[in-house]
Amino acid sequence: MSAPEAPKLYAPREPIFPRRVSGFFRNMKWVIMAITLGIYYLTPWIRWDRGPELPDQAVLVDLAHRRFFFFWIEIWPHEFYFVAGLLIMAGLGLFLFTSALGRVWCGYTCPQTVWTDLFILVERWIEGDRNARVRLWNAKWSFRKVRLRITKWVVWALIGLATGGAWVFYFTDAPTLFVNLLNGTAHPVAYTTMFVLTATTFIFGGFAREQICIYACPWPRIQAAMMDEDTITIGYRHWRGEPRGKLKKQEQNKQGDCIDCMACVNVCPMGIDIRDGQQMECITCGLCIDACDDMMDKIGKPRGLIDYMALKDEERETSGQTPIPVIKHILRPRTMLYTFLWAAVGFALVFALFIRPDIDMTVSPVRNPSFIVQSDGTIRNVYEIRIRNKHGEERPFEVALIDQVDLAVTVEGTDDNIVLVPADTAKLIRVYVDAAPNTPEASNDRTDFTIWVTDTTNDDRTSENTVFNGRVN
Image (cartoon, rainbow, N blue to C red; front, side, top):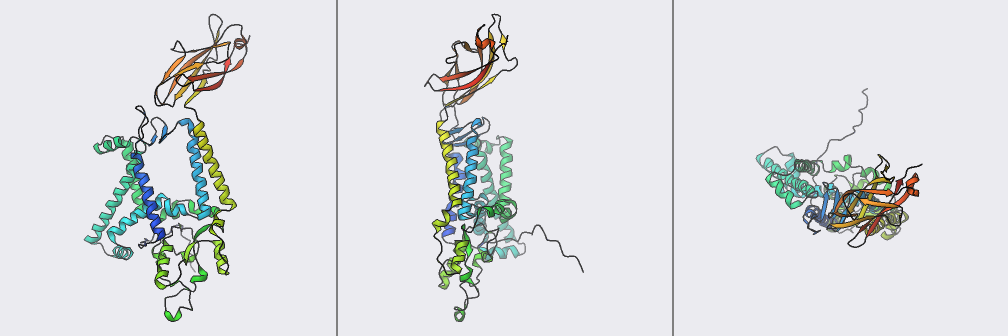
């Protein structure tokens, strides 16, 4: 007797040819696709006037100068906590929507879903609907098959090229880079990035498709911890549909509403049968609902055989009870906690954004040596100060020690301790702080004091605490 065959960890992909369907959820997916793709492709071309010395692209990740521009907001490297906060909000938002409505992110706005929908649309335009594509797949290679395949692949490649091109436009001035790409003078990194993104979009959207969701994406495994019996997700009403069977007049009162037409399976981009219950592969896109509702209309049965519902409602309906109102499913402790945390992080970011100063500074004492003894006995400490001017024009800044009567400050290269800092730039200056002989600051080991920087244009100020090192007798 031969040993049993070991289970396979990977099943070879069976091609899926979703059938065209129309309905509320399909139309909503078209609208979301148009909005998300429009935002992605068009955003780099939006102009935003910030002055003559700053980029006029509304959304720009300026890696060369280590800054991020988003319309009127400018994020500097030391303000990375804003980006971290946005990532936290994105994570909490994903938890919130998954807990309340299942995998709506996967079904409607995930980039893999959006681009796969677009690629399937192109495939349907060129090769026909499901039956035509199945016949073409099974047919022997011919001139027509080669022509249709090449045409489809060329369009897919152009979409991938547009996707990669739009991505690199976020990192430099889009019109300038576009011209440079056409005349071959753009940086090799731009061409490499476009090639990689073109290839991955072409492969992921055209060939891998649902395999990315099943094998590469971790979210299907994580979602189980985010969902419970109150989560609204797509389900099949077994109590109403079973026993299923073909539509026959004499048997209409002996079987359920499901006529086993396979419409829900034929439109599913994941190739699953929702009637088998909740499955990891289901992205809750709602296309099976549209297909089933259309079939119920044709045979004169009520809609909703396949619908968005909660597991708790399915149990109540099976026992003949009234479903719980949707709002009660959504407004429960878990979702309210996620909403509170999401709102708290958002409020904190907005508050931090409005209270952040237009000028900033950092102070770094020069430690080698920690102090210098002048010929007249004066003790001198040296500091490097970096002043950030976040305004769109050059500003004069004065460095001073307020209420520090026994310490004197001098800015290297100036007579009045006023430094001109160019627009939207951080400038490094060297500052000397002196303590006269026989003063407490000169003889103490460490003395705390504050360095102030004032924008003489509008009197905005910022300060930094530091330490003066004296000579211990």
